[in-house]
Image 1 (cartoon, rainbow, N blue to C red):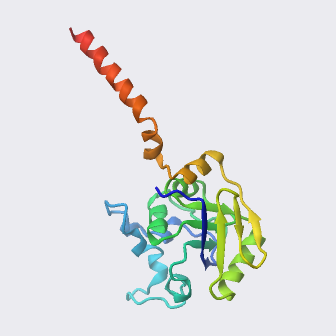
Image 2: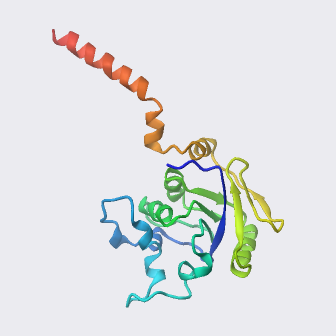
Image 3: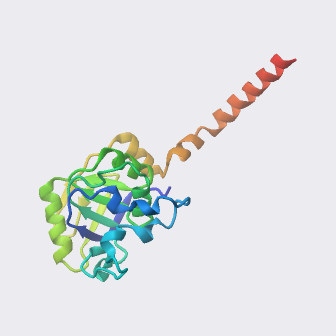
Length: 203
């Protein structure tokens, strides 16, 4: 997992509330066995028509926001089923940060474990950012995990809260496997003692 400290990027506005995980990554793509390639199917049913034509009005198809790594959305983002694939899809597409007033609890946990910073700001602050991203060409935000701030060059600045343990993992780029491997020496020592004890008992 890539460490996260500070990111300055274009901000993409998704002015919708209650964005559920089945919209983030529809169920028909959950059969894939890889953890990569999900970005192609992010918001699949909103990005294209039933005939497979791109929906020009949908923000992911808007060239103004190409390569944006920060997504701004309405409250209750990530509601619905607990599929971790939703975090995989956002990350694979290129998003490192999602800003919203509230997030579903399980999605909040899954996103953090996959290197995505979720910044909870007030509805008023999020509405300001949505308007800026929609109306100001090339609108960028800087998100500092170390300082827990979201800011732009126009004077906007807001703080967000994050669990200290999750912050540590994101700063260090540690997922669950990475956390375990930090104790590899102790685990090897335990296994060696265990194997020796079993050998002595078998004699």
